[in-house]
Length: 222
Length: 373
Image (cartoon, rainbow over all chains, first blue to last red; front, side, top):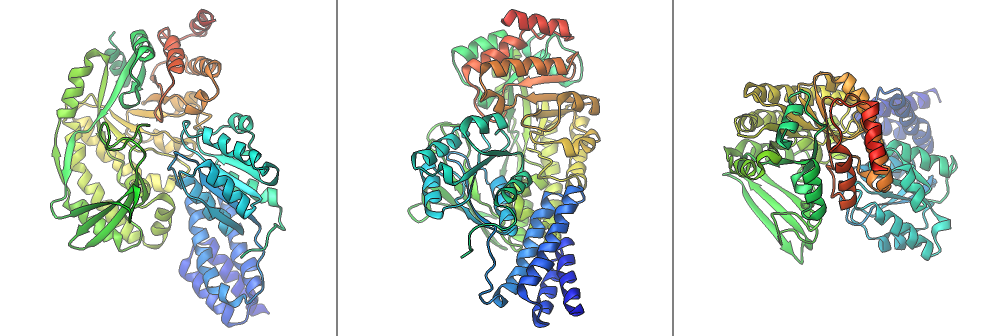
């Protein structure tokens, strides 16, 4: 089993050091040597991601490194996934994301989608310029625990309120937590429109989502 | 002082008669409130193009219609080394009135950018190297003639090379990944842009504009200090050298969160930090920025989120902001850099700033406050 430890360390270090080739090689070696795939993910890749998070907290890494780490982790996952054979990996939770109608800013929302996904969330990204009705329908259809709304213009911020009103009208507001973000969105505004939280940035948003669903998460993935 | 003299005096780092208040020309509504605000104190800041460009060896095909989507344009760039495509989404109004802006004054938005995979970098690099820039000062001369003493003109530059990649051509998340995996491709394109842009820095510097604007939409959360130091600062140095040779000040549109970059910005050669957003939208108070950037003028972009809180909040924010910058040197206020401002908010801001005589003091600001009550 000491060999397993070496493989797990290689996976962890690969993610922590943002090493695409290293993680690919470590994942292939681990699967070939019989490391249980769920262990490879939890004690290898996810442990590496935790190191990346710590480096981010210490400002050794920045948002760019978080995004790259997510991509490195995906590289490892693509090798390990076929070996899972029904060992269900439970999604931490389900999130619907949208940039509201009239707003085409996608950077913040896409970053949130990437980071949520790599942190074990099932993410349904509705894209940009999404009408309130479409968001409400997606919540009805997908039953997420969390709805994330983004706006980068003060003229499109009122669309967030329309979405929340739509959720109320559809009887869905009590079933989903709403997190809002985007540079003009303030805590006062979030409170005024009845959102549950205003994320200061992508990482703050991810942390709040993790806090809400807890460590055990909710729904079964796919 | 005319509004123009007031703005220019401040931009050159000297004390004017009042804190300058400007509105961006393309954000400016026309009508009663605008006239009132202009009569009180509001000047105009106008960014104008200074060159035209063409790519003699690139065939550009635009497609619209059922296969692409009614509100989408697919643009194909065919070059001798390959083809790249981008998709632009347009809001109602684009192409139906002035230029390519929608009823809400928004340009078509890239929903699919031209660089998607490593091979695309070579195609785009060909396009960059094929581009011919030609000075055309008509827009600046025309604007100068129209404005007279009412405002100032910037010669407008595009995003700096790295922002061009991050914002316009690759998209920030994909840029991060390409930068990690294909740095040679990214850097080759960066170097090509950096080299070619020298021509437009020169064109802008030699223009009849009052100052040169390096629009960069900088945000420290997206552009980390490593990227900033390695790719942005050398570009700014090069541009500033050329612009300063012609005696013009260089401004940059830094409208994001700048806290993490504040010490590096202090070392940058820009004379003017334009669209600076203090909290709650930005993360750096104006006072701290003024103390850190002792050789720079700060044009404060009034935070749009405060407008959403109503006129009382706008009044209080503006007065508090003036108190925080006493004696008020090296600052100006922009009505908004990100969207249209309501008539009532324009009147609140102009009502305060017409009385913001320099040097500011607690007493003078209290007088303004009492006058407004």
